[in-house]
Each structure stands twice: as C-alpha cells, then as structure tokens.
Image (cartoon, rainbow, N blue to C red; front, side, top):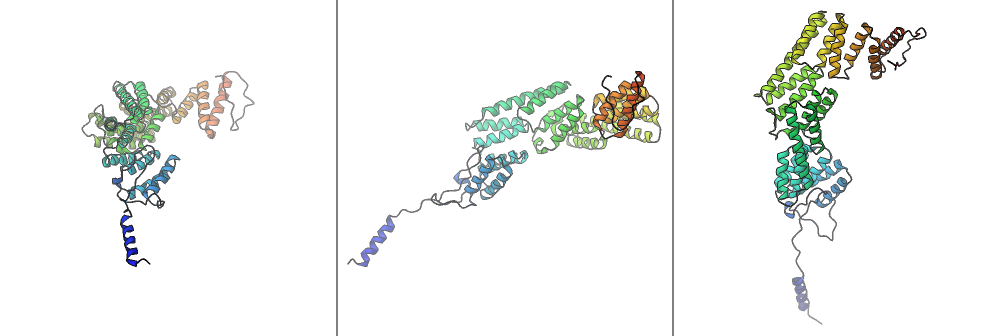
Length: 437
C-alpha cells in the first residue's frame, strides 16, 4: 500500500500545475448603432466569465436592454436604461453617446448636445462621437462648430460625406438668406431659410427667426406667429455659443426683436415691449434695437391714447391718435381696424372701408376688420360686397346668429336691388348662399 506522504505529494504537484485565473475582463458599454463602444479602461469593474450569465443589473445587460428598446423606437424607456448604465460607468464616452441618441430621439436636443460634448471630452479620439456632435450642431445651425467636429471625425477616418454635404448646403442657404434680408427681398429670404431648415438646420433659432420675420414682412401673420411659437419651444442654449450677427444685432437679441414685432402685429403691445426690452438688455449698444424699442413704445402710447379717447366718445380725436401710431408702424392691422371704428362712429363709411381694406391686406384672416367692413358696406348699400363679406364670416363663425341675420338682411337687400321676389324670404338661422354675385 502506498504511503500517505506519496499521495500528498501528487496532490500538491497537481495544484502547482493548475492554471491560475487570468485578469478580470472589464465591463463594456455597447451602444445603439449610431454610437461607439466603450473601452475596457472606461469602466474598470469586472464582469463574470463567459460561462456564467451576466447579472440582470450589470452594465452589459442594462445596455443591451436599452439598445433593444432604442431599435424599437421606444426612446423614453431606452433612456432609463442608459441612465442606469451611465450611473454604473460615469466615465464612458459610449454611455454618454447612447444617452445622447435616446435624447435626440425624444427631441431633447439641447440635452443631447451636452451629452455629446461630454462624450468628446471623455474620448477625444472617438470619430463617431465627433460625428454625432457635428450632426447636432448642424441641426442647431452652428455651422462653424459642426465643421470643426466633422474635421476631427475625419482625422479618425469616420467622417460622414453626407454630413459634409448637409453642412455645405446649410451654410450656402444661410448666407443667401442673410443677403436677401439685408436688401429687403423677403420672398428670397423665406425661400433660403426654408431650404437651410430642410437641409438639416431644423432646430436653428436664428433660421426660424429669419423665417418668421420674412413671413411677417410678406403679411403672412399667422404663419409668422406659428413659426415664432415653435421657435420658443426650442432650448435657447443653442444661441449662447453663436457669434452670428444680423445688421449688427447679436443673434439672441435678433430673435427677441422678431418675437416682439410679431406680438406687435397681433396687438399684443405690452408683451411686445417687454420682449423688445429683453433684446435691448442683451445688445444695449445696438442702435437698431434701440430704435425698434422706441417705435414700439410710441405705437403703444398712441394706441392707449386712442382707446381712452374712443371710450370717452371723442371719435375724431381717437382717429388722430391711431393715425399717430401708424406713422411709426405703418403696417399694424390693429391700428387700422381701430381707426376704422372711429370712422364708423363718425358716419364716414367709405373711410372705414379703406382702413379695413388695409388691415385685411396685412392680415387677411382678421375677423374683426372683416366684420367692420361688412357693416360699412351695408351702410353704403354696397350689397354685393356686403353679402360676400358676410358669407365668409358665416363660414368662419357658423354659430354666430348675429352674423347669420346680417347675411340674411344683406341677401334680401341685394335681391331687392335686382328686382327679385323677396316676400317669401324669412330668417330662421339658416340662409341661402348667394353665389352669383
């Protein structure tokens, strides 16, 4: 029988021959298709060998789950997983890139931009991170910053030719838009702004402001208002890094000026002045901003004086006050409509029609001006014109019985002037549409 010491010796030798475990593998942060993969050094925590399943809260599993949700377009759920991944691996550029991708899908572009900037800081050699940052910069209209990032991406052979093409298109159309604005060619300015937006700068506050201003000058007030409203939903941080100037105006100040002008056109005088004062605070040395603010104050003062005089029954004086306001803002539909009310009170129906025409030329959908003109046509016994206006109003205000009744009486008067039978016509809320005017 073999002695125990020999057995012990063989066991000891076997232990010496058994290989030692290798170094632990670092967890990685694989990301959705648009981004890059984190390096092992970026996380520093070990994961289990391949023969074992990763725990459900590991970086690998959290990221994989986020990627699957991202591919399905479920960006909000993906974002929650990427937030967890980032908490596990805060220094991973790839995890930052993942979250930026989800934020972009949710339309939270300013937050995505900040994550992309952090990803580039964490991994300056990542061409994909530079490329993603460039794409976001271009959406904000930050042409020079986008160019720098695309150049850095190109240094790693990961520059996207399509992004370069978009950058050149945006830059070209932006320049042409500024040139057209400078000479007051508003149709061209609108066309070029739309082209720049269509080529990728869809979240540029500067371009949207130029679009809104162009629409305002072309008397498309509703479109100008909807454009500026959409602009205000964007994160204003996009302008903080822009050195672009228009007519010497700082970009941020210019956006406020356009917003103020749109408010003024719609009769929101107090809001317009408050916004213009913000523009002046941003760019206090700019003469144009100061002139615009001063004009707005004069217009608002004239309108307030006119309103007070009108309420006091001093209609002639009120018309003069509104006229003073129009000297400073000749394309304000509210002042024209208010002065038309004065002419109506004074029995000067033809003058009322003239001012309503001006108000409607500037703002074709101005219901109050259309009502006032229709009433003035009735006083002038211009029944065909009167019926035409009331028919438009009937469509716009289908539940307004006063409009329906006025249309009925205008139709009766029109038929009477034509020698047609009207004895069987009765008003009952429904009226016949006269189409042969």
